[in-house]
Length: 149
Image (cartoon, rainbow, N blue to C red; front, side, top):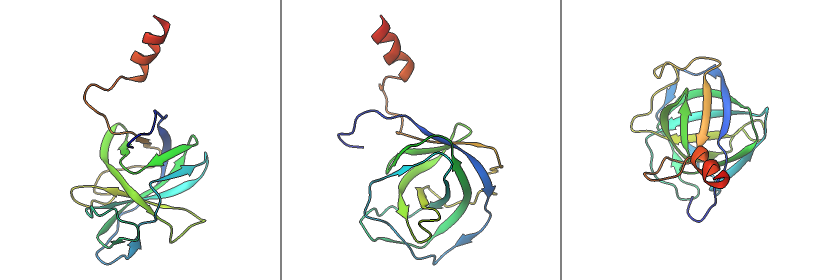
């Protein structure tokens, strides 16, 4: 985000699909624009149509997507795209720590909060957090070819 340099995508795997939603969940956005995650950690993915990103914002309308195991350590940033099997689900809104240190709730902004069941997610689906695609952005392959050439 902003002035940050390039980073690798954080990948993982869906380990449990969730199928419930709440209208008054009361999650609270942590005052962090990013969180480091370690390989092997499991975090909860939560969809919301709330767009507010101010520290401490209350997030009520949520749909639970599922739990994902992190496959490679990295940094998840606000604004990263969440992709499941290559399909963009939404963008990272922020983080809620009500269950930490067991896991973070990674809040994902979507047009309409749909559950993991409604999105047809399955255990072993590939999860990826990566910077949002920008028109004209160089791909990693193109950058490597430029360095070699």
